[in-house]
Length: 114
Length: 110
Image (cartoon, rainbow over all chains, first blue to last red; front, side, top):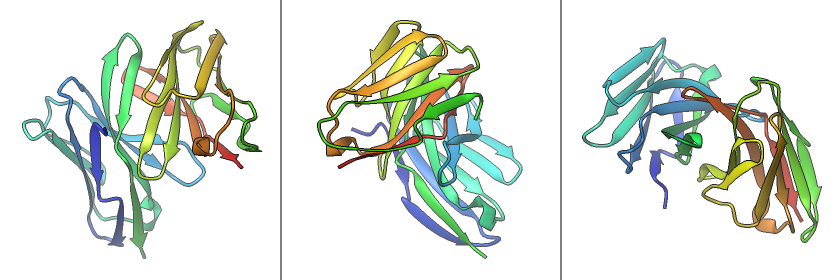
């Protein structure tokens, strides 16, 4: 049973367009929600993250929107560029005696066409 | 890659053989994790460690064991590899709220 559901699985966007990836979670014990970006042959790398007491966080062209009551959050990539083509994972983090336990969504493969 | 080295980077092995993957960190961090990545499943936690000789199971631990005899090394062993264990394996360390991943090991079981 996947505790974090991510959609869509793949996304094609034209250069300059907006890419939107959505995630939903079930466990209200999660206390941190990061997004990871992964290029082929590399490990995932932290892109941007948000805490549940904040509804939006923006860093450059990347914005997380968070809806605590709906248990949903999304990543918006404004002015998408070919260099943004990668796989994106949302995650939910629970901090306990095992450190930061990450539960990942299934991933979205983004292709930005020039 | 935050001082995380995985070895080997690629391996092909036969069904039924034992395989050990190594993760080495230079950051002296307490928490280390092994994930596997499969299409449509994201990354799933196999085992984790919260200190030397302190390990526990994750979501998909069946068929895997781990050991951590030194802070810097975390080993993942497939006792008898099966085709369902063909995957990309990532080691990670974490501190504060962030996790940092190695470059992965692509394992193919034939």
